[in-house]
Image 1 (cartoon, rainbow, N blue to C red):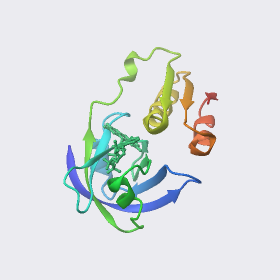
Image 2: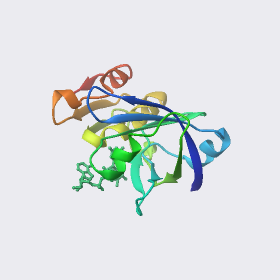
Image 3: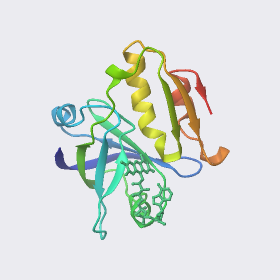
Image 4: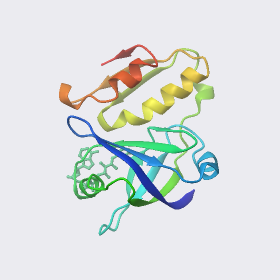
Length: 159
Ligand SMILES: Cc1cc2nc3c(=O)[nH]c(=O)nc-3n(C[C@H](O)[C@H](O)[C@H](O)COP(=O)(O)OP(=O)(O)OC[C@H]3O[C@@H](n4cnc5c(N)ncnc54)[C@H](O)[C@@H]3O)c2cc1C
């Protein structure tokens, strides 16, 4: 687990919440050693709030980490006001993540709402291993659908 300030690279508002936040991760080696599996989460410290807010890692590479979250209360509201260049106090590398050794060749991934983001990283990993996942995603309303194209670029996706 690492405790570091992360500079915000980009905040992109979908037509409707959830928000997508893309952090640039300054030290690639820290990223490589702290995020060990898809499905892990981070804990974000929010100014003025005692408890950290957990958000799943949607995707990551050597220089970025992508989080997608829905604004539901005070913490996520404050997160949504952050601008590129501002920093978050963040704990990374939390949770065990998914063990894809156990997936089989044709895994079925099912996610709904704020449970969708970690499915993306998992799907990417499975595809990179030559597996053929089927994805089923659920959302409350059509307006809340996000990452449709991103999933469809990987595999056949059912919504
Ligand atoms: C391991 C883990 C991973 C998570 N990953 C994600 C993620 O990738 N994306 C994401 O958007 N959220 C995710 N969540 C949920 C996220 O942590 C909460 O939505 C967030 O902490 C709410 O903080 P807040 O201060 O905005 O709301 P709070 O002030 O804590 O809550 C405000 C109100 O919203 C309600 N509420 C809280 N959470 C939710 C929710 N998820 N849906 C609907 N109502 C809610 C509360 O009951 C309360 O009434 C994850 C939670 C866990 C435990």
